[in-house]
Length: 329
Image (cartoon, rainbow, N blue to C red; front, side):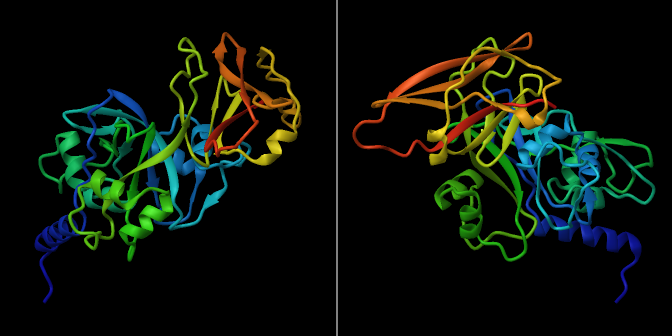
């Protein structure tokens, strides 16, 4: 049986609603924070196109969230079905979180809210949420050139420790256990955060709130513009006027073979990237290790601080470490 177009459109909307529960992330602790969305392009796209689509403030933000070299050409192509982490600011209100007034999408001829939500923005939002956020009473009536706010789901709640929340779109055949292993969190945490009643109930296209382990630095001074910066494990952030790269990694043993160089420094935009200066490196003397930490910036001046710890006796795994180096871009 061939359905008339209006009925066919209604059928597609109902099917989409059944297949993908609307994402609603709980958010009660802060007014705004850093957040991430796992975007899967439906077709090959450049980093330039992805940045433009999501209105990411800087290519450095996009590259850092994905652990890419900051010199990566913006014209490099991202294969289809490859996940790209999109950094954005989350704002909380009424118990839930959405992106802070970005991105906006300019409607093109032939667009529908269903296609904008499910294909163009990878199912990170539903067409109902876009309609509600923009006061669209009739989802089938949008006009070319109309600008629509895309309310990406997010949260600012800390889970035991500082976290950054990732909006993750469930892939076909993915299980709760696989998602937990992929992001290094317990199944119990995933179940609790997403109110999952049945471990076998994950649906393709469902958007999950995944709290990621992050590095934070208590050494950054409160008066520094980047105070409170969080960096998810396996990624980095450029800060201090793009002079400092903060990596969140597990500390390698090779760090213990470097030398100390811990001084206040000025950001030199003319310095060659081939002569990057490390800031966080240890000095070893007998049983003591002295570490140099990045402590923020002020009017172009890079601030540092030192701390010492004993290495005598039993050694313990320190977990993620925020490593710092001075870069010039």
